[in-house]
Length: 112
Image 1 (spheres, rainbow, N blue to C red):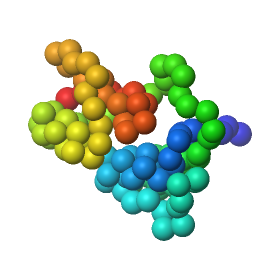
Image 2: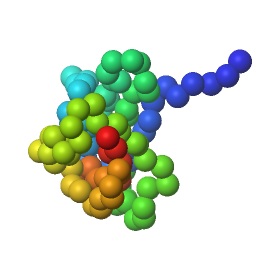
Image 3: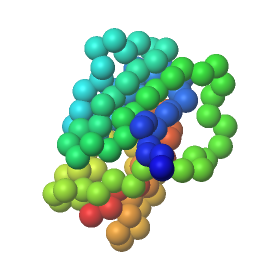
C-alpha cells in the first residue's frame, strides 16, 4: 500500500487572506467554514491535493524549501497580470520562468 498527498498545508499569519489568494489563483473557492485561523481550499479540476491554511504565531523567516510550479494555460503575461490582480507580486523573471510571491511572501513559479 502507498500514501497519497491529501493536502498541502501553509502556515500563515492570516489563513483567510492566503486561502482567498490561492482559491482565486487556482480557480477554486474557499470553504464556507473558513476563518482567519484556519481555512480550506478544495482542489479544482483534476483532483490534486487540497490546500489547508493555518494561522501560526511566528512569521516566515526564510525562503520556502518547496513551492508550487504553475503552468499558464493561455498567454503567460495575461496570467501574470491576473495573479498580480489577485495579490501576487513578481519577484524575478527569466525567459521561461517567473518567480512570484503570494500575499504573505510564499514563493511560487509560473511558466508558459
